[in-house]
Each structure stands twice: as structure tokens, then as C-alpha cells.
Length: 346
Image (cartoon, rainbow, N blue to C red; front, side, top):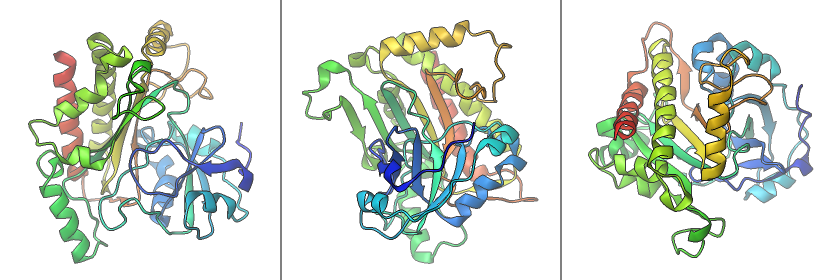
């Protein structure tokens, strides 16, 4: 069933972003994300049905909104121009699309978190909304972070960021994380009022290639919240399968994505996570049609409530027939898979 168009009163400032630009909005339920974007990103989403093996790892695209110029997300919400949102149903059924990001991707450079002033926003479904306590990790892909349209100054700046982080050596870096620490950690000075510890882009930039596995460990194993070694390894193994699927999809496509990310989400409440994993295990594989990342496409009712993995941020993405697979992004995907495999075996 198609979602009704959003109205001005539906939108509020989005509160779940742990990285990326300001100006991200949501509806009151938190089920959608309205993110400033470029026309190139819209074009990439709208072309997704022609690339179904890749599209299954993309967020559900629901259309666009034009937003009047405003200094803040709250002002932007109040200044929406009337605009209909295109239904996502035809795209979702044609390409078996999954759900969308709740962690806005982090783009290093002069914006430094400022709102992307394009006047255009893309509407995506928030994959974190079904989770009780979603833990979120954004892994930015690529040793080269700029596309051909970038100025020499921007290329130099982003090359410097890559050289000083794991982007150059591994083809990825941790761009941001939000990890629920458990009810007993609310008085910890590193934990916010909701029980989350937020790791910004500077956290990921401190790691060497040898030590970045510790960032993944911080995300996947949270004993204070009840996510022990067994639960952490279970989620790690599921994430690994999805990353391997992304790798196969990228190897089969001819595309270029600069500063795209893999978004990882899993249930941070240990009891809810156990129940979700049990529900996934008990579900008969043939009873519900599933897309390539193991998530059902049956109106979302049977999607896993344990985890989700998507590729996000396609502002600098294009299809490139005749140019072969995107080895720049694939370097980061393969490095991520290796780290997840190491953690799953320990």
C-alpha cells in the first residue's frame, strides 16, 4: 500500500544521526528519513530497478521533497513547499529494495556537518525504526573519496584525510557509531541521557589499519547491555554474509561510488535481540519471499528485527558501462569482510 504524501506538519528534526550533514528531517513516527541530496543521487536511486542485484542493498526510495532555504532543521520543517512524494511500491517490487539508512553518511571537508543547501531532499525509509535500541555503524568506503567533478583543492583535502586514516590503507574508515550501553550506564559521562554512546568521525580517524578491528569490537560486543561474546559473534556472522553479498553485487556491476557507506544496524537490547534471532531461526525459509540480504519483502512484516545492512549515500555515484567493477569501493568492502570474519572466528 502506497504511503500518503507528507505534509509540512509531518516533519520534525531527525534525532538519530551519528554522522553527516545537518538538515536531516523525519516524520513524527521516525519511519522515514528526509535527507538533503543532489540531483545525481536522485537519478541513481531512480535507475536502481535496472540493476536489481545491486538495488537490493540500497535503501527504499520513496521520492523527493523540495525544501525552502532555512538555517536549521526546525526552520526547514516549517518551510516545506507543497510537493508530492512518489510512491515507492513500483520500484520496491521491481528491484526488491530493502530499507533505508538512519545514520546520515559523514562527508569530510568544508561542510563539516553543515546543512547541504541544494533545496532538494530525498525521502527514504528508516531501517532503524523497527528496533527497540538500534546500534548503528557507518563505514565509509573508498581510498579515493572524490569524483571527477571535484576541484583540485577538494581532491587534495580528501586525499589528505584518506592518507591519515584507514581509508587509504584499507579502503574504508569508521565514519560514526551509536551504541546503546545499557540501563546501568546512563550516569557514565561518555553516555548520553538515552543510554547511548555516540562516536563521531574523529573516533574513526584515530585508528591504524592494525587497530581498526577494535572499533568494530566496540560496536559488536557490548557486555554492559548484555550483548556478550555469543550474541556479538552471531550478529557478526550475519553481517559478514551481507557484506559478502554486497561484494558479489559490486563485482557484478559497472559503477563508481565515491564516499558511499555501508550502514550496519542491529538490535542493541539483548533480550529483544535474542527473541529476534530466535524468530529468524524459526521462520521457514520458503514461507516468505526474501530479498538478497535475507530480509522479507512482504510489506515489511517478516523483515528481521535483529539486524539490517545497506549501502547508503549515493551523491557521487554513477553507472559506468564498459569501465568494469568499482575496485575503489570493493577494496573497502573486502577489508570489512576480512575484519568481520576475524571477529566471527574469535
